Length: 225
Image (cartoon, rainbow, N blue to C red; front, side):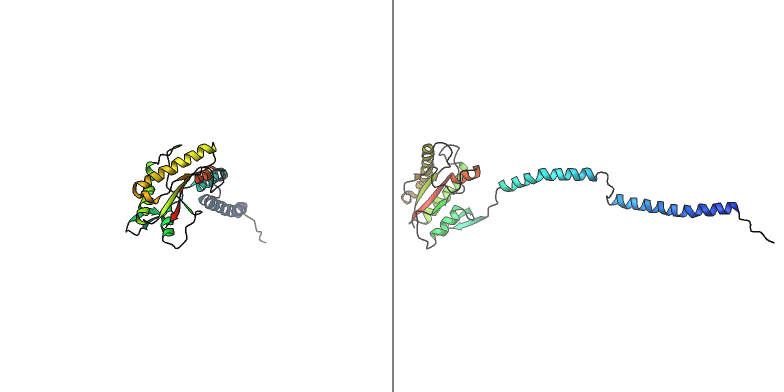
């Protein structure tokens, strides 16, 4: 009669192997997953902080970007304005030279309601002294008058509504006279007496500095062409 005697050491080894193999497998899987998560930033301990700072940065950047967009200086397209005498003026598309020459070449009738605004003309603060940087556009208008000898124009001056109205009218008259005097150096018979209108005939509400700047202008009205 044979008796099967179970080896206690073999039983122990079997039990040890039975839990050790899954344990090793689980450990390997855990290490592998941890490696993957860390590699792809899933467990990045800075995620929360980075997200917080990114959001905060965005909150500050958005208004700044909007402010820059609102006050950004538009890029103007340069072009050559050709005159009947062969002269070519360096100007901007949609600028006073471009618009004025197109009007003089058209069959559109003259009107006391149609004015062309200088768009590159400035004065020393609070005075009627034309800035050095503005001389080029005044010279361009003089060249246009020379190329169109039959044309007669009138210069009008305008201000915003800041300050005393009578003082504004006086300033606008002085500035209109200054431009007229400069143009008369080459086209004396083509200009009528200038007129300063002060804050009258504004082209934009005087509610912001940008709009007030639009109202501080010198304009040309064609009387004959």
